[in-house]
Each structure stands twice: as structure tokens, then as C-alpha cells.
Image 1: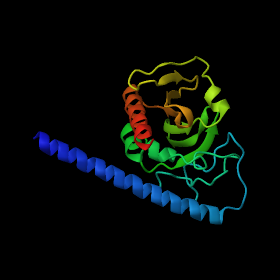
Image 2: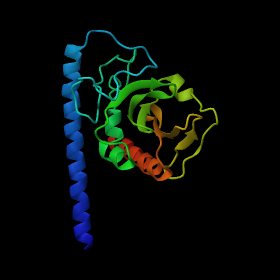
Image 3: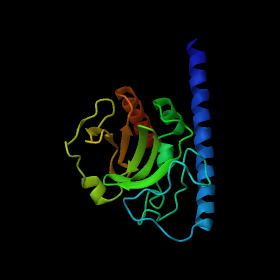
Image 4: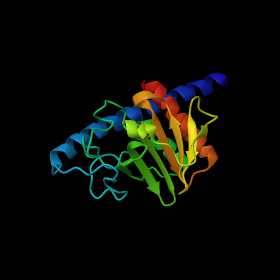
Length: 201
């Protein structure tokens, strides 16, 4: 019984890795197509680029709007050679938490980072890289508290109902942002993000 369980787990991990590799390859193709089709304009920092509708953008639904270098007005995660936020917060885990896999992402910058957000009604999940000094120095209005299920992580709640979990360090410090999801989903997603960061370091 234990052997079968272990074999099943290994098979599932191999499948996840294959899906992730496929997603990254599709994203690279989508980015190349977007660069060729881009009119040359970039949005200013702090604004969302593209919406949940996707409005004809190419690329897999788990990434949504293809990332074009400089589209947020200054270098983002791709220019730094970091994994796409959609790979750090995988589609399968978002779906399990209650944000459907059919939801496309928005690429945006918040005071605490640059990343992607997937929204479905009142529920949303997002992952932001804290790439710049102002992202790293930003403090939530009510401060932070230790997040017990991930070593070294801190949590905060925003007045608008969003919850944040600060994970990792250096250029790989990220903020997991959630809304409309319960504590169990927050804990599971935070652990997933921490594992992805450790695996990709």
C-alpha cells in the first residue's frame, strides 16, 4: 500500500513538472508573439494591463495577458530572470482554492510589488515580486504578524479585505495576495509558494 501511494505521488509530481514546463514554453511563445504585435506603448506603473476578459490576447489561460518586457513602465520579473508569477502560484493550486482555472490574469503593480492577479467575482489570488526598494520598504497599515505555517513568513490584512503573506527574501521575496478565500486556502497557497520558490532557487 505504501509503495503504491509513493508511486502515485511520484507520478503526480512528474505530471506537474511536465505541465509547468509546457506552460513556460507556451508563455515564451506568447511573449514572442506579443512583442511582434505590440504597438510600442507601455502602461504606467501602478496600473493593470489587460483584464480578465483577455480581449483576444494570445497565450495560455493560466498566464492570461502575455508579459511584454517594460509593459509596467520599468523592468519586471522577466528582465530579472525570475520565474513567472503563474509558475510560482500554479494554476492547479489556484483552482483548488476556489479561483477557477479558466480565469485569465491581470499584470499590474501594487505598492508592494509587481505581478499577476487572477479574479473571479469576490475571490482572487495574486502573486507579486518585491523588486524595488519601495516595494520592500512598504508596510501595511496595521503592521504584520508572523505566519505560522511558513518559516520566516509574515502576514497582514488590508482594510479592503485583502490578506497578504510575505514570503522569501532578496529578489525572490514575494507577496501572496488573497481575497474571498478562507484561512485553510491561505495556508495551503502560502506553503505552495514557499515550496516553488525553494525548488526554483
